[in-house]
Image (cartoon, rainbow, N blue to C red; front, top):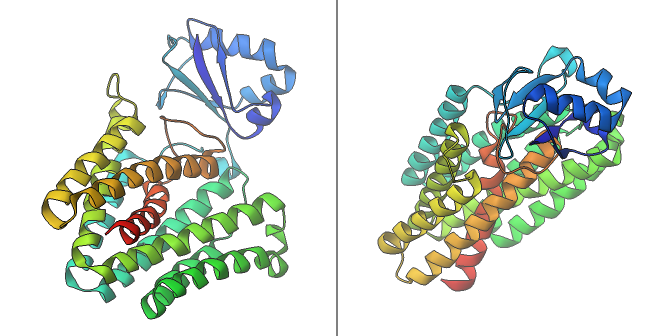
Length: 326
């Protein structure tokens, strides 16, 4: 028995994104799945790649109740919706984190520039991955939201960030007028949601730095520990610990460090860190939905900067809780 995850046309043929299937090997699981889901599913299965717990597998690979079998069909250009190389992910995470820490130490202006650059790369990464699986996500409105969120917040503070969030949704909803291929409702909705998150997330980072260098530093420490721990647990399959739980523990540890080093009111830091933990979980769910078409706790997440999906959502949560409590 194993949990099977389905993508693209296999998901459509089966009518579900996941199912628990009996079988001692991958071959047994696939045979049972074909019997359950029918001939359209069988035809799609002929060209699909098979992964077990994030690693390539064969029909002879043995599986158990704790294993996840992912069936990933080929998409446009022959590419596969699979995890980026671990070395590339680690390098990008390290570069983005180092740049944000350094910019925060220099000035709010440098932080703003760095946030725009990092979020811009993230926007293209997300749009490319989503488009490969058939969800047309327009990158230009998202980039506009990033730039608007940073500039409006830096110039006008909270009202500027609010205006940027509203403007981001309006631009995303109107983009299909100029570019007809983005007119499907799922494309409009996805672009609007991502644009709003981009505007509010980047704006919140600027607001944190405008409040104080220490508060932005605390946020960076919390999300770095949380996302780094979750990424490591997901990559190396730490027994008994799923990535979400490890990420939550990382946020708690980061919150304790922040409370001891940078806050006069430690309870505000701890509560804000708890909010970050919740937001990181929600952000991961949103990211997997957009990138892979479903919610899942562990396994490969397409794209090289998927960790930034959650960080942007967490930034708004951290700023809001501190603004209310500290």
